[in-house]
Length: 126
Image (cartoon, rainbow, N blue to C red; front, top):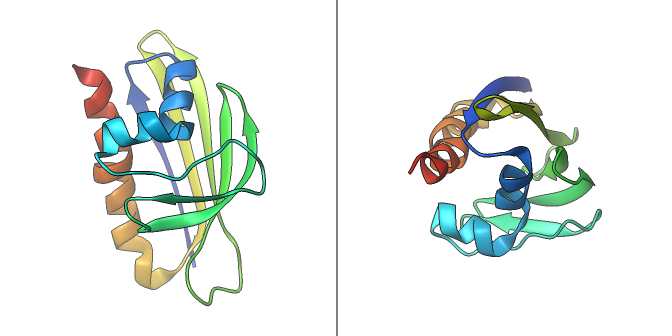
């Protein structure tokens, strides 16, 4: 199991980034895919045609998202914490993803950088 931590810069205020990560309509705008998402703790979510599935654990409006991502047969929970920090350029996103299975680590980190936050950065760039 491995952990991944990284910061991303997005040129939008934290409130906008929060809604882009939690509103299924907005998620579809920047991913191009339908999404199942709710800000209700305990609800399940699905992104990228079930490529990412899990359970929503906690939310702080405009500031923080905590989720459990499912990996088949994993004994330890894989927890994703996204914290949004306002700054002069918009938002600094702090990502911490714990307990990523070794076999999935490269694909997951590449996905965070290109598909997930790469797409969101591009969405707000224009």
